[in-house]
Image (tube, rainbow, N blue to C red):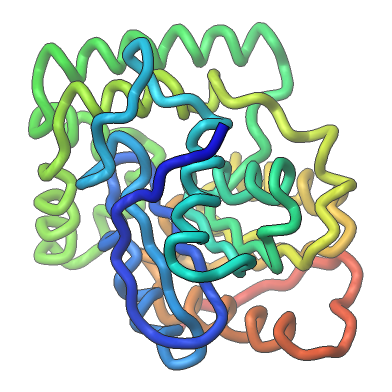
Length: 282
């Protein structure tokens, strides 16, 4: 089965850098990262299935994880690239890791911001799947605007309250472009409860990996170090004074860390073995 090319925001020239947004985002959500790296890379930022302009492909009311990976490969092909460096945030990080596992020939390196390899425990995974199904039904019942307000009120995003109010308002407004039924289909099929756990596959991810996590996002800090212990060529970058969306809360620090990583992995010298580093926010 072949995938379909997704709608993309694209800028720059050079080797491909795929940028995958989180749930309720769009390709434009990572515009600051695209702008930061467009001089060295052809940045390709798709709207993930069920988001923005990438709609209409759900089957049985949901988008499937492996179908989405095929869509991302098709999107890379449509952009004229065989291989890319991949950067993903949250849901986008899980999908980028999925591409490295299912389509390793398409991945040159990985940057995962607030990412994890799924949910290992079957009972916890089933409970999350049920919760996501209920949340998807709520999106359809109350509409996107009310849901976005509830979504952003989660403790996971509490640290974003320190952002400039204009920035928070802009982020909220950008999330309102979605269709409720499409967003629900994305959650039903691409949430952590539906994603196949990838923990056993991590030792075979034979590319450099940078795991970026905000130090205030303690659950994901633990997940990052757990993944790094299984990945052959990984390092953890902890961003000070940041939570789950470290690229929004401390953009300069994240851009500096990602830029340093990408410069190193595009050089012919071998990448160092797994280790952890601390990045200080500026």
